[in-house]
Length: 98
Image (cartoon, rainbow, N blue to C red; front, side, top):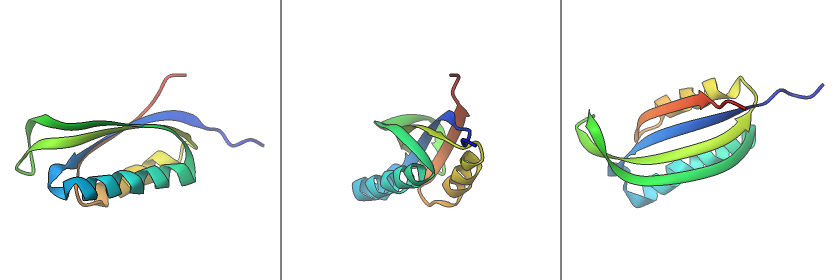
């Protein structure tokens, strides 16, 4: 029987304190993780933006949008890894309407 997959969208706000290399490697880490557990459709880097309010005393964040399809149990694991990864200020994973 075919494995059910759903479309998801995930926005990450990374700390600019990671520096260019740190941001690049963090994006790569999550791109690889998503690819191994599903199909990564796109990675859209919005770049450095001013935050609406301070998060951990930081005024700027680096925004990244991932679009992917995967089994419904994977986003919980992805969210868990987001929460324990240094430099991730905020994250959001939502199911997209088909």
